[in-house]
Image 1 (cartoon, rainbow, N blue to C red):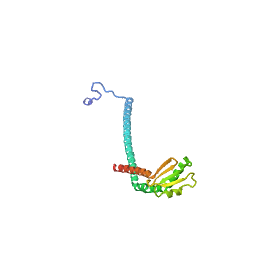
Image 2 (image 1 turned 135 degrees about the vertical axis):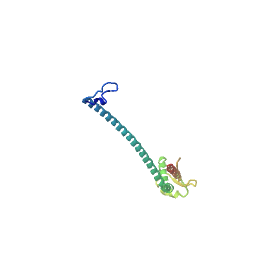
Image 3 (image 1 turned 60 degrees about the vertical axis):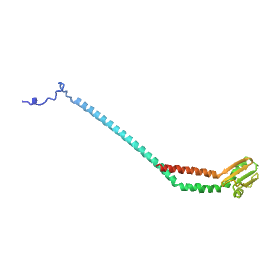
Image 4 (image 1 turned 90 degrees about the horizontal axis):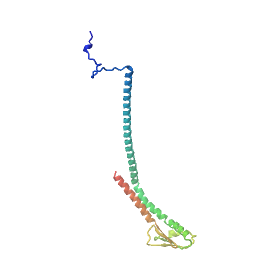
Length: 198
């Protein structure tokens, strides 16, 4: 005698219809469709993970570049500040001495240029007290017009006035030095502000 009556029949569906069993070809198609679905889902997950990694790497790279840029600018600023004593001595000692040594030569160059524009006109050079001899020594001997070097007590060191005929020029090395010193002081001030704001 069979025991089939004791076992539950799973071929029956809840609605009372019979369960349809698949043949081998239909089962293979279903397996392929399930594989394709799983493969597509895996591919989408991999692309999404790659995009997240790429976004994270881009953000990290951007942060690193920003940090490097800041570090570079900070290093340049600090280097500039460390050179402050040298630049200060250049502005306060070396440049004034250099301009002072070349003062007479510069005046003669300017006077010669002015004399070319007004040939045959009398020439006068007004210099501070104590500088007339130095300038007279540098004057060319073959000038076409008489030239006088006159000491003017109202002129300060580094200042002079040139006159050829009716044309006049002012030379003021002190003003140039003051401009250079002001630019240097502004740079140092900004650099110190940048370092203190870090």
